[in-house]
Length: 167
Image (cartoon, rainbow, N blue to C red):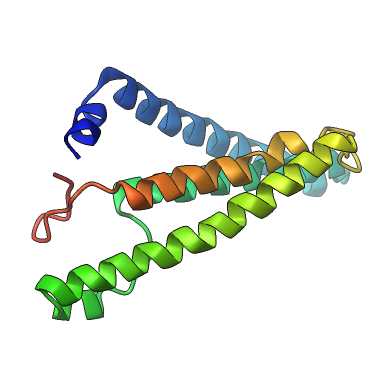
């Protein structure tokens, strides 16, 4: 794990982490602005923009998968820590291994099916209904986010139990 610690302290790792945050910030800001424009045009101008709704849904898929991986990186994922808090030593390590194995197994299915979906959409040039945009551009975030999340589950940094931070 020495090499992994060295990678975590590299400039490339910090750059990619910052890029991840900027992409999420931009995506969420775009969603907020588009939603505001959509509400304004619907209720003030009496003209709903279906195109805006479609792009918001597609962007939400991409944002979700990147956001889930970011939450895992920061330790902000949802979890049931009651059992983990009661265990220590070997039983806790076994439960943590089982937790990670189940998550990685689920993500393997997500990555596989997401990759097949993306490849099918690309192969058959599937486009969105209103904007006529290629759907694979948004679907590719499913396997990418799944792989990033699996990477973070497998190579998660050790956490200090009393600080909640990473070591």
